[in-house]
Image (tube, rainbow, N blue to C red; front, top):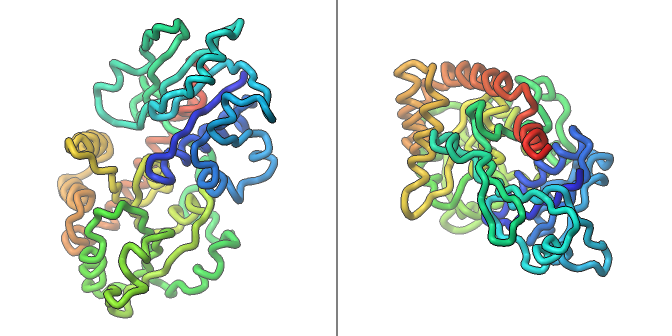
Length: 356
């Protein structure tokens, strides 16, 4: 089938990351014909860089406006249209669907959530005045919803530790032997300076890998730069592709992630993590985080439950780091549960079954 995926980038990386991972899953795993129309093609191309060309060349990455322009790419009626995260389709593109002899199915691909209410709305019709069938599709952890994006399925543990991506070889040569490794990818509102100062005061040797832009966030190159003892080394990562970032998550002992794509990949890496969920003015993010933690910690001990909740709500590392070993064991078990529940192929496979 022919799939058109529409992606409007809200927070720079997450939306594009999900759309690219979905496109490659549909194409490389399921043999589908996929186009992505994106309003920030530069970011999308950066995330997709580094992937095997045999995968990338099967997917058309196109600017938003080419969805309704036939100057270079004649408009082909798709079988399925994905509105990623509820973005509105361009009016001129939608007008072309009205006159198509065979109408596609439109899928409103929602944000990932662990909230119980999504089971009631998943795969439900959204009646439209134009008459084209449209449905809500909710990714999630429960078996009766849309599932998770798995491609590529990560190897467990450090099976790829010696295969350092070229873009990261210089950085990796600077790591301290025997030190813990942590990666940080968070929103500007996090109390990161205070958090790092508390972490450093614990006295452990730790390498902290800051994703692209976080050094500037901490004013590392200004007169107000953060001063830390030598046991805690801050290292700035270059901008890396999606696959290279997945690799980093798998090689760290602890990760701070944000958004949706890195949130799922942190879990599939089988390592403890903080999910810096996107803050919303109405505090809906707190409900969403609590719903995930109810699932994630269902089989955890009371001590680990309290430590994890403290970490996820930005308590200082001194309050919970002593639980890291038991959290690591729990993370590996959770990873196994996720893969077991997604044995049907996860989000891409469930989408295919739904539209088929």
